[in-house]
Amino acid sequence: MTFPVFVIVLSAALLHAGWNAVIKVRLDPFLAMTLLCAACGLIALPALCVTGLPPAAAWPWVATSVVLHLGYYVCLSEAYRRADMGQIYPIARGSAPLLTVVLSLVLLHETMSAGALAGVALLGCGVVLLSLRGHRHSASRNRLALGFAILTAITIAGYTVVDGVGARAAGQANSYAAVLFVLDALPMLVLCLYRHGLAGMAPMRRFLLPGLTGGAMSLVAYWIVIWAMTVAPIALVAAVRETSVVFAGLIAVFILKEPFSRVRAAATALTVLGLVLTRLF
Image (cartoon, rainbow, N blue to C red):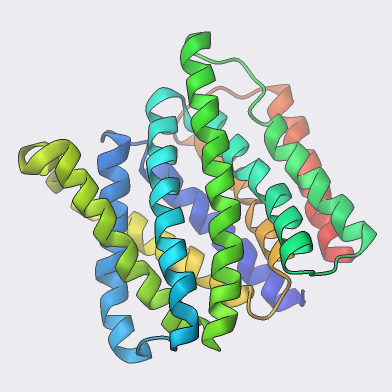
């Protein structure tokens, strides 16, 4: 991974942490996630008019990604319904790069140096460790939240590999990303209408501006990642993206006022060390 790509993916990590903070603010997590998805689709629609549709070879990957993204949105919103950002975000995002490495090595036969593999492992351990702190909810609710967080990690690894391969099959990232964001919004809107009805979706109107802001952040962040996976190994891009947990930890502590601990500080140090190894090797 070249240094410019490395820096750009780090910026995507910051944006990713930012939109995750948006869905924890004053609105039901599933409604917030639906609002963000709809915003992404709305913003991507004009871009799709410019990029055009991807070639036929990319469409099976687009369809698979839409299904995996729907699972991701549902699992993440259910996890956030039961636990705070500081607990869910690290375990969901921390497990994902390790799973992505396994999938990319086994299925795609990508190669990584021993140093880079060690860096990914340290990064994953650091972000998982971030979740090991005092919880404000009951143990039973935390176990359920943990289950949804793990399912979220599985869907992240799945759609990351699928989108990396799909963007490469498309020949370039822009048309693939544009159509993916537009199509992603549709099943979420249908599911939200089924679960909540029009009356139940009414609270989203009060959060249109945060929703559009978070949607724009989400779109730019993942658009960058899709592009990066066409010019760098998928596993390395996925690992660097997960440094978003460091930014998420800062947001959780200083903006959302969640508790800080020595465990969080040590885990952040492990994450940074893993990031350095992935860059050096």
